[in-house]
Image (cartoon, rainbow, N blue to C red; front, side):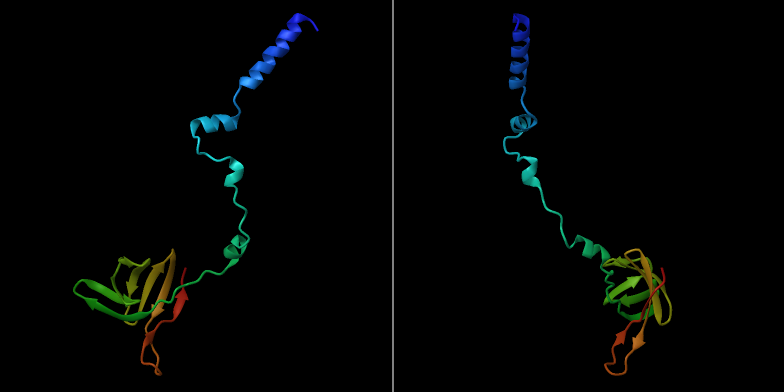
Length: 130
C-alpha cells in the first residue's frame, strides 16, 4: 500500500472511533436515560376485547319532575337539575310532566317516572333517542 492510502485508512478509522454513537450522545445529555429496548412494553392482549365490549350505560333514575319559579327541574339519580345544568356527566335537556330528556356521553336518553307496585319506588325506563 502506498503512503497516501495508509494515511486515508488511518484517518477514516480515527474519525469512526472518535464519532460518538447515538447512545453515547444520549448518555452525555442525560446520564440517567435508559436505552429504548428497556422502555419496551408488550402489547396488551385484552385491548381487542375492550374495544369490542358493549358500552355499559349507567342506570338513570328519574325521581320527580316539577316546574318552579326558576323553571323546569328534575331529580335524576338523586341530583336536582335545572334545564342545561350538568352533574356527573348528566345534562338535563327537557322536562315534561312525567318524563325528562337527558344527555350522557354524547347520547340523548328519554327517561320516565315508573311506579312499581311491589316496592313503591320510582324507577326509569330508558330509550336511546340518538
